Image (cartoon, rainbow, N blue to C red; front, side):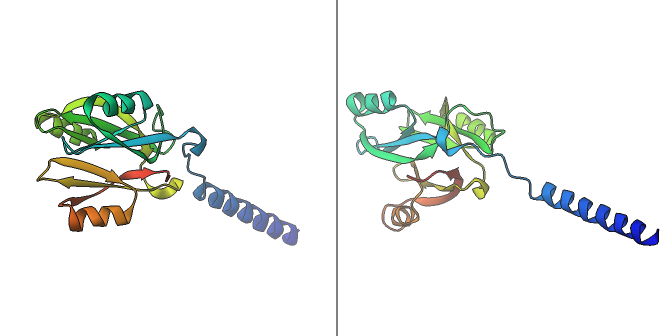
Length: 179
């Protein structure tokens, strides 16, 4: 009887340990890469402004009517998600006085930028909050001399902008799927 009680105790302990292990290794809910859409990048040399959108119509309008040059797909982001899938909003703002598009993931920065003359234009898309879902960093840079925010997934492009183009590194906005 003692042997079967001991066996039952060992079996119960192993089962409990497996339950704890499976709970601690629970898979993080991540937005499906299949739902990602291109984040298009444009640049206006006249305005010294980088512009990002998931709307091809909006990019075409910026190219045809505002003087932007389409620079292709910067990354892949997620449209209209809720944030329960590992993503956070990537807010878009614009300052007409300085002709600068600014993107951020924090509501506090949206509020601060609004006090500095930026108009809220909505959510450009949703991006991963951290690298746990397999995304790559979306670097944020700023040029004070040309009043331009610039975003890239390329570390070499980031480094070149810092070394040669007068940008400062403002860190990582979030994580996106690479091109």
